[in-house]
Length: 455
Image (cartoon, rainbow, N blue to C red; front, top):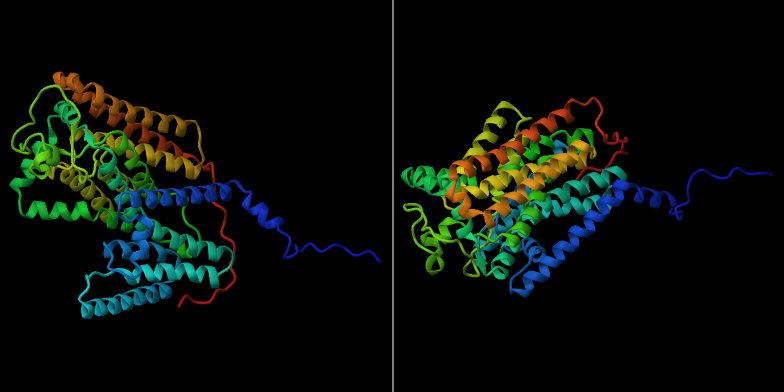
């Protein structure tokens, strides 16, 4: 008697699993994960070479020791909970707070450093463990994505700290005189805004410090708004703020290595100490003369060109445009306040901000194109943004004296370069949004089997 072969694959048959892993998106995400892990390991070794802990060790220590930033860890937990039901979110929040209370009491009794946030990290790691041990299929993948998103937010912060250490250790000379000279074309905005912030002390300074320091928390809030339907739809949107935020933090410090700058408050202010060219910021414009590289200490980060705070605030503003009216107002306020703080505290020159806007729009365009599929408009926009950004860096480095000599020509050209990128971005994204069928549609969610509650 002839028997019909079974259509159900054997448990030992790796065919379906291999086929799934051979899908282009699966291969791409696997490669991205391997590259990210390799990058973190490389940074860990680099940090150890300079006698400090790297991003992996720093994040692992916060499981037990006092964290550097409690709000950042709770922001990561909030991002993780977008995949949970409301009951599970309450359980997760209660568990995090309870663990933090226990840690707080133990540290208080032992006289150790006091801070909070360990509970949030424990719950995020617990979600990953639950995903591996008590979830299957699409539900496991979704919970792992949520936990990974929360951990990446914290890891991005640790990675940035390590990058800044490497810039100060490997770039002994800085190019501040070049940027300060080129900044004459823009009217030396850092000196102007710096005097304004001094005149509004102490209220103005406190508000700007709060806005400047809590930019990651603001990004997490906008990201939560964009991801608010994940728990219902059981899938992440193809593009959201957190992805662009992390990529900017990953790529930006690489430019710091190429164009090391410390900022006016260090190069021309009292914060630079004996390394400063002069203590004139913000009261007196920097001295003239031919620009040249100057030696600087091995502590101050070379983290100015481009201004990543400007880049992050720009992407925050862009993504807040699709939110409610209060969120749109908040996004606009955060952008203006961040630009004011970066200049008013002497952390950046005006030229840094122009480069930061172009850099942000280029990365955002690339991330949108990656989510929807590349077409001619996407390639043109990203290519144009890259060309403008490179042209800005080259002009700051090799044409600063000419820019300072002809400010009425160079200044408008700098503003026009940034404005052209803004216009190109707006026109291209409107074209994408007007298309009836996007180039890449997310797969519809598959019905999942009932899973045990997360406890």
